[in-house]
Length: 490
Image (tube, rainbow, N blue to C red; front, side):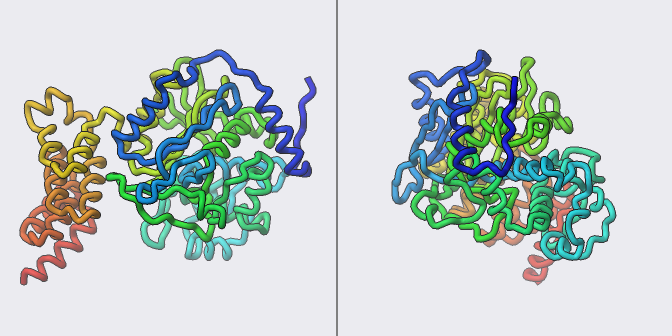
């Protein structure tokens, strides 16, 4: 069978016409995918209500075509403007697969090699200025390749703290999710092409695939189209408008646009076939049933492989999970803090149960729909946090299994959300619960100490900072706060 060979010399209009024609002509295949039933919309709305997520846009892929594009809720709780198919969301870490795809078009042209160190494509002096912020002193950095970036094996942390970027492991040694790695790749692509990354990706991905509402930087059209972020309690916040692109996190898009990208990633056209297959080939194992390809996560369960990725920019969350063979699944974007708690419900409804990706450590901090954190949220929102806290008392907690179905970071985030809303006494109660559930964690004492300090209880703050150091001697924040508070007492 003759294969079409799409080069970048095709005009975007021709490319788009062929791509959409291919997507529309592709039939559905048999597999685990179940199209949404008549009660699906009600399930979505109930899930949004439980998690205080105000708005959501969901695209469903069936056999490689967009079978439906659904909109739920509002862009902003204050204005009550409804979500539509044109609503733009922050794509968060779903930015990364798009950057990887675009960079692979340079590999197809021989302008980038997957296994050649990135520093060989750009001036180290320039990289020191635009990325490292200092002269390269760690020789291990000179071993980082595009493949290691795309499979998250650079050794970099997710994000640096302060100005210095330090390797946590040797390049290639192990999986370590890193946004910094993708920004490194972005800077090298910009140096190689001589173009800002958004312009380059627009030429290689957005325009050819018909992603008309996608950009890594803020554009005027977004003023009317963009959703607003919402906190854990569903309070509308201020929308960040990026002036400069971050290839790991600043993509703005719609569920329809991103579904077009996922469909192209799975079946072409747009990327040389061997490179497309390489994207979907496991480069490293993350945990049982979960690996990573080039830019995308891979889930293996029940003899099938799916591609997946999550995104978290705080009060924006997003997720996709699509069967690689049947090219069926879903992509969604949410404008609420708890948006990733919806992923399991959608996966179970559309793709059946048993998803190692959702139970992996990468998703540990996102509570499932049945977590008592959402009962606590409901009680706190009603102004009766005591009713929520009683869910964790014996024998109620044993009866509900509450203690085993809520994690430390969830309660910690909950407490800080209360602090942000100036509900200091309620925050103290939540942090005290976290101490009771996780008494050997230095972080829970540190958080409680901070809340007590804000309440003016200096002795209580000092006592808990000291306990934090007992369990986490490297807690620099506790050391600093103790110094300040002890000087105040004197």
